[in-house]
Image (cartoon, rainbow, N blue to C red; front, side):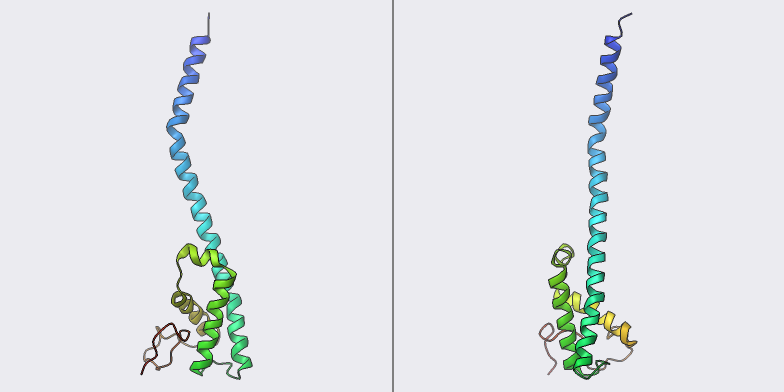
Length: 141
């Protein structure tokens, strides 16, 4: 009995199954890689913000305002933190399309948490003190 027609049919069937499933496999793989890339960038930004927090607190302490009660010192600390994040993880900043203002918001939350004070968004009454870096938000007259 000649098995070559059966082998050829099986090979053709296997090729067809592979060809049909290849796009699905590629899409799944691409999705998994994108999720891994997103997570890697999230981790990089989080680490950069943690390191920037140390920088911001150090600047405040050197300026003699460890609690960042002075708006000018707080603004300078946030500006330095934003610059640090943008310099150390530019690919992650670009990947998520982060603006200076969005980085400053994340940095301000880290500062508030470290200093155990409410952020401007969480405060019941606005204090009038800006928590974003100078130049990012127009100054109130």
